Length: 237
Image (cartoon, rainbow, N blue to C red; front, side, top):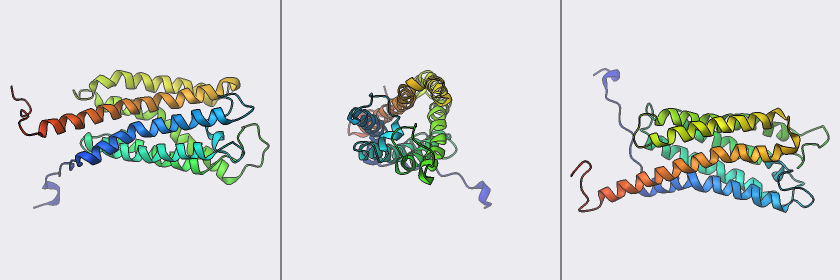
């Protein structure tokens, strides 16, 4: 038999516990990251809550920079796990679309952004930046692009799928709102509001991921209930 005539193997279902943990990571990561920048912002004596940008909270001259670094690493690791679970849930290669894999790629880059620290807390620091400061800036660019692209790609994938279609409009709106906020932030036209704009632009797509993760958890729980002894078969009346 010619290799091209062989049927494609369906994606293997994940064990229930593994799916549950990976789906929960889609909530845990954003919550940990948001908690990290909120806590670290409050700890910076002499600076307003939103005066220091998120990356600056992990700089060596910030107070307790390990909090923000941990937030980056936890969000990145959880994104990799969650993206894998979502890819499997949506049918695997050829059916899931690029969204889940982009979540995973953004997760890896988020870890890198946290470990490649800025030299100083404030962006008004003198010139002569280190290689890892420049690397942090370069890594951040595709992460920002992913924040806009992921909700839009998932909205397109969910269209026509009765299990997920209710999220299409909210995800598309989330993507457009994130694009607008980050465009103003990256343009630097409102320096005084930069910290606020950045936090909003990051929080919107992370909230969207949480909504998807909750839906994924609910889908897994429904399957488990359907497998219990005495449960009616799908479609049975």
